[in-house]
Image (cartoon, rainbow over all chains, first blue to last red; front, top):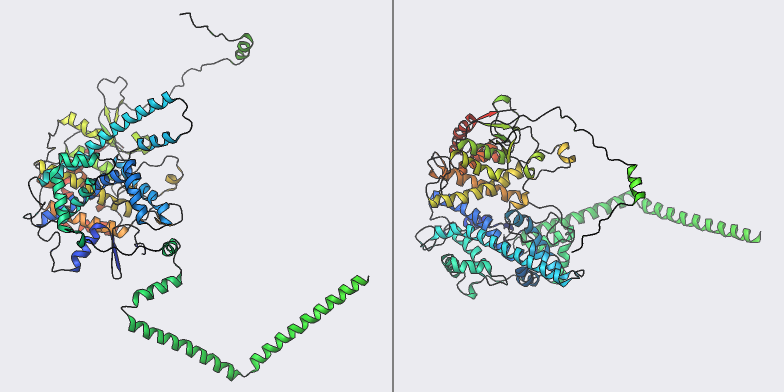
Length: 336
Length: 291
């Protein structure tokens, strides 16, 4: 498995092309099969414009909420997300990539006010070896609990403010646009985020909020999921996970040889004839070069190799003479 | 309860300290005084330099221009502008700030408001907009939030990436770095590090996919143009709203940015250009610069 060019998931590879990012993938898939109905073909121009803005809002705000639930909340991170990532990643990467992924989300969540600092401090305090007074520790834990409760309330109110507009827009309808038979791209994007938020995790605050106060969003998410992946047989097959050697090799930048071999492996099924003809021309070039060199040598006569041999022999004799002189000098010294 | 024993300084120490007496100097007279403030003044980044310096009142920064347009479109009259204040002097290092006179202050000093409090101050001056905030209905108000996210996410990221603020020697060596929003907090999903997410090198920098940002920007501009259509104000409102101020700020900055690709995308949409020009005359009429 080679990493995507941009370094971000989701990434779709189709033949030689590699596309990453949700909107880019949607555009590519729509272009692939022009006869099939795309997610936005049944919308009016104004609705299409509206859905662009709404999808941007879903990806920004709901994306932040999903990242908060899976990456920022320590309980979920340590018991679910990190375990899932380490089980999927190969051996050298699984020790440092999850922490890097979590850190990559930190600036965005901090800007949105959804990054929880108090959980980190509570964890650190528990491992501190310098807490002597038990009473002080209890008072600190009470303060931490209060801070965490206040933070949870703030997060809940933020989540409500984020999710309310979608609930209003969806009120009573099966899907956002059209006559309710086909989900549009906005339905798919929204249901993906809501489905992730509904999963049972260690910290179920947001999931409970959605199930209790926004049942129509939960049912919408489940309906779209059932339409897309109705049974386990419809799941796309998994690519084989890389071996330990492959994952180690991927850590180092590829050399030119690896590039050539990988590119030849890629082209073998498709462009076999062209490759064969190129190989034939390459060997012809090598053969011609060898023949020309041999002809040149024979035309210039055997003087060239012979003179070389004499020079080598002469140097050898000089070296031996020098060694004898050294020995004489040493013997002379010893005598003295 | 017995009184606490007082600790007195021992005599040798007292004599030692008397060798170093405390001398209080008289207050230094300050030759310059700040001018007393008589009208609300918006502190903004300086505008672009043009051929007619007297006619340019629009700040070159999107954030400042947004609030300028908001004040003008809400009908707040008699607001002055100044751009000689460095961003270090602003609250949290971020311009714009609004300096308003207080009726009860004696020396003419006023109150400095950060950008987030400007809306409340304007509501106090010209009256509140109501629960719908000037939009046609609740659905339009929800939709306006989506457009705000689109503008402040996709369009702002393209503006920052393709039209960055020029790097001067002063900005490099000055100890006060501007507190701007970093680009990695504007992109979803967050960009991976430049050295690679799974490489052995320590994490450094960000690898930002410029083509993806440009694609999203083009999609955003085309959907903005589609939604505006021929309406007088965005989303069919009867009066200008905060979203109109935001849209004007972004369109104005895009139409005057150096990057050709960004500018052409907007100039291709005739209705956006015409709308921006119309709103520009309204906003320009509301300001008279102090400096």
